[in-house]
Length: 422
Image (cartoon, rainbow, N blue to C red; front, side):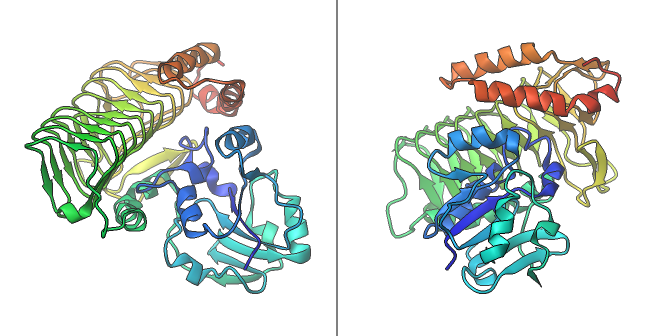
């Protein structure tokens, strides 16, 4: 068995922007758990190390204080590197054994994993401060395998329903009492065997939790207000709130400390984000610290039912999917009555407002809407982020400010190309 598992970022992280400007790819949520948390669950018997882009390293160290970041233990003789974009499941260890000769596992030009020891491991130690490419593993025996992994933001949505079921089965022992918290009289739980309700969660009267078509996991301290309907598979995170008469349809994941109302389907809301009011959110991924104003709506289907084209990292990509909604980066916001067209991408720390459809690609640190867009002043965006996070009793530290300033610099060119001042 290898001495350690190291979760890595490869060069294709950029296809997941803007969602990964403020986090490594493996901290994206898909199902109940993040991609990293899945690996931790399935490799709980092997010590873990983490690799990320250098400007994120202090943030990753803060979140993982007992884990080596961009380094490997000095005394190890072997390591299993796993691409952080991979969705590890119960079958992964059969496809990528923890012991054996040095081998690179790939799907075409995509690194899946690499089992490395001896001189090969000594060489790779020197690559830990940059994103990995397939050439870093040249000379290893190469083996093609098929596993699920994330290439673009819409892949997270594509796999979310399947992962909600998989994560539920991983986390829940159906032989135990899984209905905890406070369940008010009049609440309706359909297919109780497929429902988990955590400690101190509150389910108000006339709530319908319908797990007939898939499991529903309501985490500890969550609150579901009256007349809300949740259809499985779905996840409601710790300390999150589902508002009165909300409609949460299948394949939806809502992370911790979110407030969600209106209509949501086939979407992921990462954490600490609000969509409190009426309005539709579908086939969407919202980062952290996002706020959607009342009656914000997104389209997730073109009128001609065609494949949706999406701009990722300033390049137009054909998603190959009929359904793609809004992708919105951390700390971005929309005003009341905002409308987002099919496949719209909004960068980090942007403010979108005004009538009509805004552009389908809104760069990071942008202010405006359909009439005009301009740059959002960096110091002003930092001040707002501080106020927002302080309301949730979370410090906006020097680490966070350095990341803001770095990402502002990284995104200057895409604003300049659209005539915005920097």
